[in-house]
Amino acid sequence: MKNRYEALLVLNTQGKDDTVKDVVDRLESEFQKEGAEIEQVQKMDKRQFSYVAGELDAGHYVNFIFHADSQLITKLRAKFKLDPEVYRQHYQKLRPKVEKKERSAKKLAEAS
Image 1 (cartoon, one colour):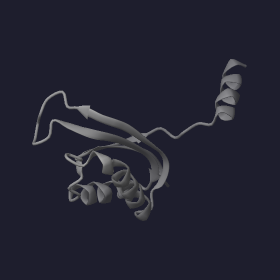
Image 2 (cartoon, rainbow, N blue to C red; image 1 turned 60 degrees about the horizontal axis):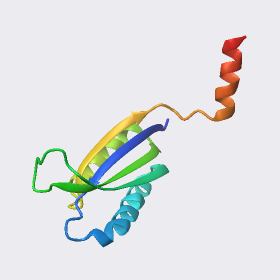
Image 3 (tube, rainbow, N blue to C red; image 1 turned 180 degrees about the horizontal axis):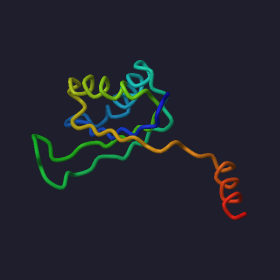
């Protein structure tokens, strides 16, 4: 069964801000190659870190929402750890997306 996940990736684009779109497109294709079904990609721009924990003081944040098997997270984490353009990564399991029709039907059933 495929679960719904969110992956927040911080990209190291130091000195190459014009290639962010290319990097995001490449990462999206990497997700799809591994079998993930991309639901949404949010490019959140470059942000300063609240504290410097490494060689960078800022990074481009990109949020991927996707459906995949639970074993795929370990595989993606290992793959992106080796990628020099992925500075940090965080994965979180999300609740299944409920459609509006289902939500309103559920509320009506609870009200009865």
